[in-house]
Image (cartoon, rainbow, N blue to C red; front, top):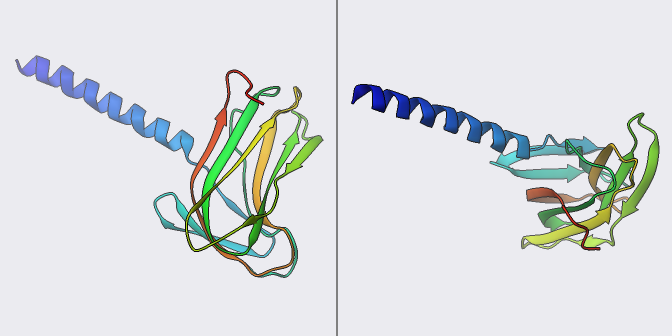
Amino acid sequence: MKKIIAVWMSFMMIFAGSATLLAEEKSYKYFGVGDAEISEIAEHTYHVNTQGSKQDEGFVFTPKKINGGKQITFQLELKGKGEMLIRISETDATGKFIKETISDPIQLTDNWKKAQRNLMLSPNTAEVDIMVLTNRKQQAAFQFKNVVVHEHDKPTL
């Protein structure tokens, strides 16, 4: 009986370790762009302050394992003050710029608002940088959470 319990506990520990690794793969590392400061205020919820010294301040991240020629959907929830854009920049395996897509302006409010961007990646895309940026010189204070980048098996666009 003790052996069965020991084996069962070993499987549970392995499974728990695997689940932790899977969860870590889904979290991203965010970086401030321009004169923007970013801080985690709760688990997977972040606060960004931009100074307004220039346009295009906010944050950026680079999801891993992007496959060229596929459709991706990027979504997150935002709230705060300011007007933001979602900008996605594609590069090939050598780092050469391919193309960039920019969303319509997103007016932030005091309530959480889901923002989403769908696009087909170029067949040569090896990496994407996803940015949420101010669309003009402005001081902005906003929060974001629930960041998801989904790669579709079959295009829907």
